[in-house]
Length: 346
Image 1: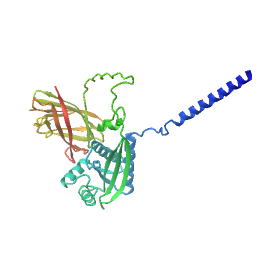
Image 2: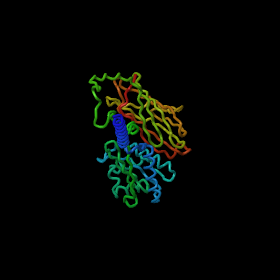
Image 3: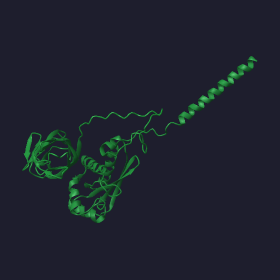
Image 4: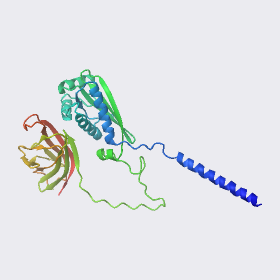
């Protein structure tokens, strides 16, 4: 009898051991197969710009213009503008290429009455090449595919109008990307909404409203970053404070007196005064200063004769000139900076 009980206990222990081993093996099999870290936006952009640069230099193209990328319907998207600015900067920093300012390309496209989908056509590409003196044009599309953006870049030979090469990248629509373009990540998951109750069917209390913090607006152009901090009203005047950073080599910057603002009553106001660092201009002139690369400079524009009933600026335009020449009065490039829908604070 004792021998039979002993054998039963041994069999039970063996059975339990086998079951535990099978569960352990099953849990291992259920682990995600792909644990590769997500590639960052910075790395994807570096890879894309290197691929484009290699294609250009490999085909002995030294002067290039970069157009804003469009969606599949031919519309310019915020991400398309961001991508064009990034490629201009990154291609320029290779020191292998001469990159034409994007504003010059935009001006030619407007003057020639073209749209961004037409510049890849042979006749249009050759025409732009003759006007700007560029060997190639980089243009392309951005497709939104679920949680990803697919970028397809085309390099057009302006001498023949033919496609010279192509490059592409897939960028995950993560928090970093959405912070740039406000693509609206859903915190619970794609296609899901926030639950209205907890697992025990108790209602979720409404979140405490967060205090309003000061918002900033950032624009980049011609190797400058303009960060608008705030615009506040004071009687019939509006004061806009911002930070200017030269992200490239030392150069001159001028902010013109023909800059403008339009309030929510469609009223236009002109600058009463302009401050760029320690330099002051007026509505009849400009504020001009030599900016050292990488240094932030405070700036301010004051507008007078603004409606006291205005609650926001619907359009704020800065008209600027820049030059890398040691002579402040020569070789200027003109460009505009625009901000929209800026609330006015008292």
